[in-house]
Length: 299
Image (cartoon, rainbow, N blue to C red):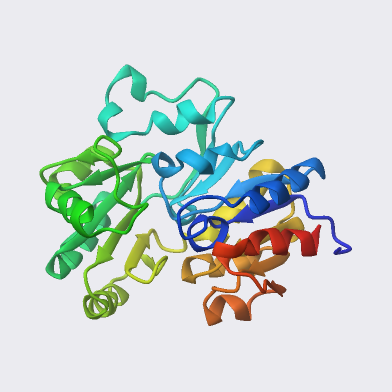
């Protein structure tokens, strides 16, 4: 048990907390419950937008704050997390049901400009087919071709049901209405070759941050925006020193958070870069409750 008390636990979802079936193993849930009993604040820290925190992710008791879109948006879910997440569905945008509950709010936002987001989209279009989407105000925007490609080729757990995202004829034409609310541009690629070529293009563009959150995707946020900055903002809002935070992750989009936290746990399936930052590496991977092992080590 560390000498510095751990007051906040920030955990990545895909590849870390969730198993390969996109579920939270019972052992992980039990370890999180024990952490809550010891007074720790639980902070999911994900590349997903708010609308994708459905199902088992919200079944963890006591989760009120979430870090989404790689740190671009930090949310207070209020007293009814399910209603807050549901309000971000694409088919509810612009309707009364699409309003946040009274005690829910975005407590920190670091958006991309419309002009920059459009430049990124234009740069990525040559690498379609794939899934090109934009996260705005906790929700998702797709073009129909991307949604169809995802349904036909996407991984289980990422084939979103109709209505979760808002389908728009053109992302470029839709984005001006979301100025100041664009969290992230994300693309899943059909081949590794196209991903690597796209990354070379994006790396030449000023004014953006680019990370890989999964083996087949690239994620673009505003410059300097990452899970490390998100962790700092969440800790500031909650009055917690980041030195008292434990971060757990597995991939490139977790690196900044692992660097910034006082304690860094990485599951066995983590990348070499993530493991290099770890103060503890679990023997178990994400599919075999590596998170529970990390929590038992620290708490």
